[in-house]
Length: 88
Image 1 (cartoon, rainbow, N blue to C red):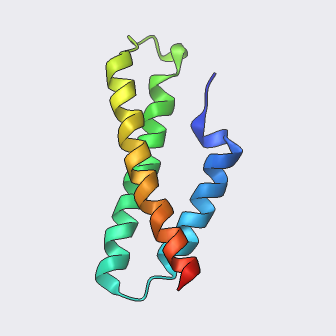
Image 2 (image 1 turned 45 degrees about the horizontal axis):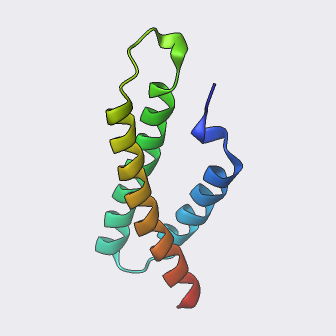
C-alpha cells in the first residue's frame, strides 16, 4: 500500500518545516504557518486513506488529484518559509 507518511522525503520535509515554524519570531506569522503545517499533515493523512484499498471504499481519482494539488501548494508555502528561515 502507498503511504506518504512513510516516505523518507515526506519525513524529512516535516522535520524541516517544523524547525522553520519554530524559528519564526512573530506570533501571528508563526500561528499562520502552524495552521498551514497542520493542514499539510492532515491532507497527507487523507491522501493515505484514499489510497488504502483495504477500507472498501470507492477511489475517486479527481478528488485525490485535487488533494495532491492542494498538498503541493501547501508544501510550496512551507518550503519557501524553510528557505527564507535559512537565509535570515
